[in-house]
Amino acid sequence: MAKAVKRSDQKKKSQKPESLPLTKENFVIIGVGLVVILIGYLALARGPVEGFLPLVLAPILLLVGYCVIIPLGILYKKSYIGKENSTQTRSAA
Image 1: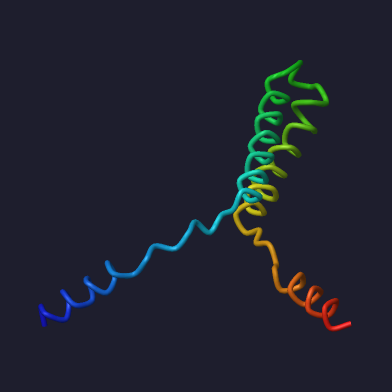
Image 2: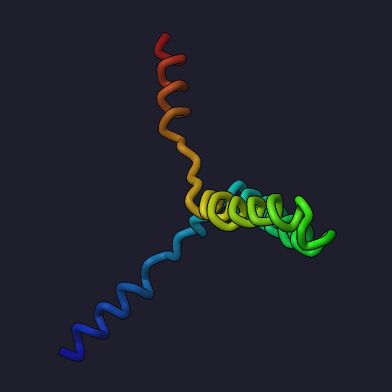
């Protein structure tokens, strides 16, 4: 049974590591999300407590940054299928 474990370890080591699943575009989107979150916290710290920025704008910016832009940056994947099909149809025509 110990031999099977060693063989599976050797197979894992021999495989080439894949490239990172996140591309430059993903990091740009995540960066935009971080900037929106930073602006939200700055708006939260500004002005009186009863003002528009801390009560309305800051929570909206934080919610959009944390719940929309950051997950979008993580999950975004560029689709190459549409581009390949469009180039094939152009060359056939």
